[in-house]
Amino acid sequence: MSITLPTSARLMSSSEYQIVSRVFGNTLPWRQRIIVTNGAGLQNRPFTIPTSLIRVLLGAAATGFLAPVTAAIGSLTTFINLAYVMNVGSAYSSLDTTQKGLLVHETAHVWQGKNSTLALSYVFSSCVSQCIRGGGAYAYTPGNSWSSYNVEQQASIVEDWFNAGEPTSGPLWGYIDNYVRKGIT
Image (cartoon, rainbow, N blue to C red; front, side, top):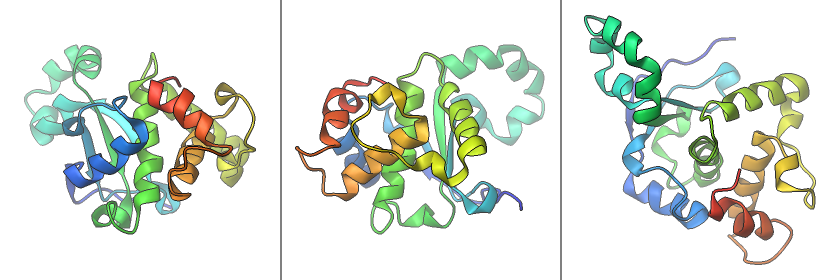
């Protein structure tokens, strides 16, 4: 088991951002703060993490002569220049066509980071949920309070609602209308 290091990276495209804006409204960070890569986690699983935009943009330079400077101001740049890296593996080129559900699911993690007090909190919650429940970390039963769901369940609710055709009624609509579009994690 290994991770797949990214060989390609880009900003979220305009067409991808239009899709996710229909779901999340104005509760997302600017499109220019969402980076998409073809990297993947263990077992080729997509994952999304917050990072410093300065570190992403400077890349190798930040690890070279700028390393002492970025280390000294690392925490500050993380809060000031927060970006999100969506590692989506082989779906890299098809997020706005055949992989829209994955796009929405991973963007839900961007949304969780942007709308949380601490952007990294959803990463820790996801790791804990997956370690304890494995694949069951994504399973949910509609009707519970939004805050009772772990981050993977919340992302799955949003993805399932989207895949169902974005209905404005039904068991998942209340979560979208009352929490997601209001930026309430």
